[in-house]
Image (cartoon, rainbow, N blue to C red):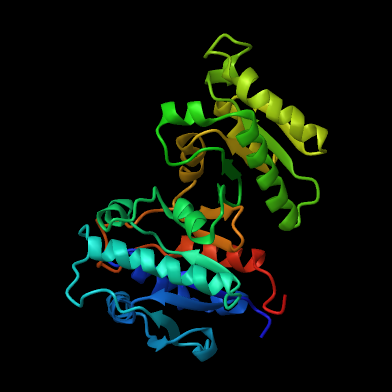
Length: 332
């Protein structure tokens, strides 16, 4: 079969990960893009299928070689780490540790070439930390597991794409961390990703840090001139169409109408806010710079509705579609 095998990590077992996974894999379109292989807990997936009214057989397998990828069947590398009585919607270090182990096993499969991409359901950062796994989130965890020194978070929607210079750190720390080298490397990673996605001449907008991108030194302490402008100049000298620094309050509108293919955001909320206003089901998180393809939903574990069967699975379907589009052929 020519479609890529995608390892789907189940996420935090106390959240909505199992529910959106069984719902997404029940969608007939998914099997036309890829061969999904869940890494998680078979009993939790079976319970989620009953909750959601999904008619599917959950079948434990040792790995991709045993998976059959047939309609009506969910193949799962069953790590069996969750107790049967784990409550939905409650913070649990046991679920945090299990979520870590799902990602670890998926990375092993990807690095070994047994799967062509990873697609992650949400984990809970507090639960991860309670389990002693001190990572800010999936992005940093995947970087550590694959031995990658630096990666970037990209959010992709039908209207805008955003790549972040900094992510899960405080705003004061982010401003201190930003420097021309980091900005330039982020621009290059975004440019390369768009080229790989088939965009021949990516148009990249680079946000400023301060209101109105500093307005020629009126706002801030010269951060745009010191930290961002040299990076843009360096990338432009390499033939990359990077423009800016541009005011963040208008650049997303311009990207949404088609002026740019990618926006470079300087910090987490600068990029996440405009994307999430489009709807949590619209965005997909792509980790750029890893040796493997990784996509994810752009929402959290939703403890408030976990276990009700109400969770919206459309973001996971889109994440699977984009993972399949970016993944290499199994023969590569």
